Image (tube, rainbow, N blue to C red; front, side, top):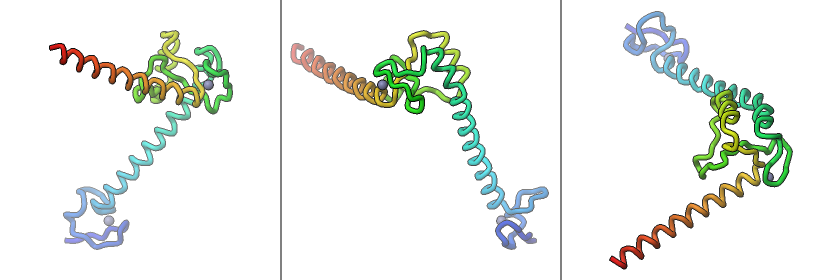
Length: 149
Ligand SMILES: [Zn+2]
Ligand SMILES: [Zn+2]
């Protein structure tokens, strides 16, 4: 027995269809589900960023103003919230829960700071170098210890 799939315009065996009132074949319906999820997750992401943006003023207020603490730059478009003790790669702010972040900023004065994109990059590079330097130091120390032994 075959059924006609309106979606891909093909006559296919009924085994190619999920049971129930499916108008399109398995291939088409799984494609549709994938597209649905893709669209949905994009929309969720967009929504999260919108929420985050709507909280920006609150974040800056909690952090003492929309101004880079390092150079005084005050164009909000390039201002970022930064983990004071963030390490490169681990300093990303979680944008998925703006309310939680706001609460965290409020509860932990000194944990976050406002930096402009430039200063943030400079900080990242400096941190990066510090860590590399520290690792080199450790290797040297290990060598020294080995030589003594
Ligand atoms: Zn089909
Ligand atoms: Zn700056």
